[in-house]
Length: 107
Length: 463
Image (cartoon, rainbow over all chains, first blue to last red; front, side, top):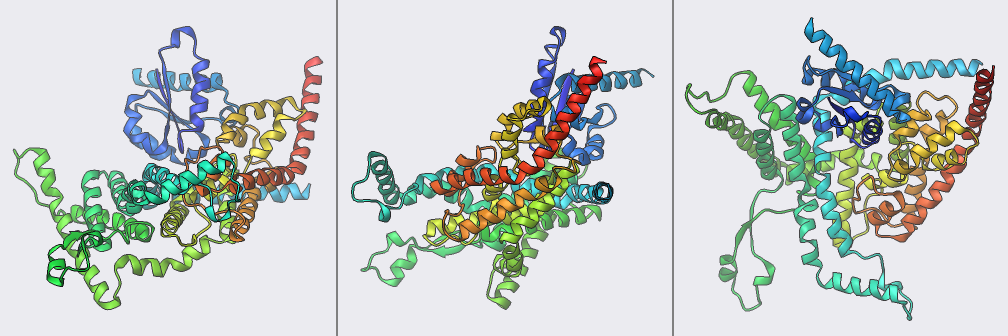
């Protein structure tokens, strides 16, 4: 799975990306988790499966979901998980997003 | 209890009323294009800044004692080398920051085109040409160094060549560049919506067809703006950038004041308080002012004039957002030494990013958002830093900023590099101490609460 994290400058999400990488299991080591600035979003979004936004740029969600299209879910990270860099929690959230999306596709 | 209710209402008002307003403001296409356009030019200001740092070593030869130590001697050598080679050292500056407005025009046109799903390269090209036409119409000039006293006037005239005057391509052209970038794309969009384009018959390769699509907007922008520019010159005796700068002068003055630093910081941090990225939202409007102030200072420095502005982008990045929005670096140190396990943990997560002015872990993890106890320092300390640093700079105790260092540079180093004055780093240390004092009483109340909760929490576990 490929996960894109977005915040204003891609700085603080890179901290979160790192802690998510640490939370990956052996079998998931090939997953891609990257952080980008919001200006970069539309250039890179198509390379990813799910998009997670830092809560401080949550006002971008509607616009980003429109650009990403129906196949790439965009969600906002919980503020506490974000602040405390709880990579495992956020990773769980990404997995659920991805699962729900593939379930939706089968129907 | 009553106070808590008032506060709750206030937070709710911010979240329900101001939040969505801020969001639609930040997503507004033109504001977004300006913000992204100005930010796109940042790497150029940093490259230009390197040139400036080389040209202006942190030493004043008139104030050196008779027996300089080795370190001072090295600085003096640097100083004399820089003075002797000033023009060569500053060439990269002239071609980056010196013509910054050209790049801003291109970047604004580019970004607005993208948001309208139009060809961004066409938008950037039209913006660039149009900007050059109104801000730097070519003139016939003679290079001074090629003239000598024995030359007659006809001979000198023969040496004439066409040149672009750089005068309005730096800070003085910034607002013109933004305006031109937005206008040319709007004109192109208006024409496109009304289907006023050259349509090629089917079978013509798309690349060829799209090059013709650019033609009509380009013709209208170039000749339209040319006529406006000529009218402006003949009526006011000024180029458009000069007229725009004159009419914006009151706003520039209002932003560049101690009060301006405080008001902008407070607005940004009220947004942060409800968890929104304040600088990303307000920056669409404040950033062009701060960036053009910095460019103007750089030009002053080179011309040997006193710096005319104080509140610039690096001023905000290092003195005000010291450790991140809300000037939280001092708070991080308190967290590290806290008796509360939870707070200590957050301090550990926040320290390294904080040294590089990134503090989302503190803002969301402590949290500072919607935190009534820490509301006052979080929203106002950054503005207080602004007022202090502004006053100290105005008094001449610390040099003004004229170089852009990346905002993630640790504050003492960043402040030093942007002023090339050791006093700036000392000012940062003083501000950390002041911020510590300002945050401390509020931190103590919050810490007591956290320790109490932790004690109760562990009681529950033992039951």
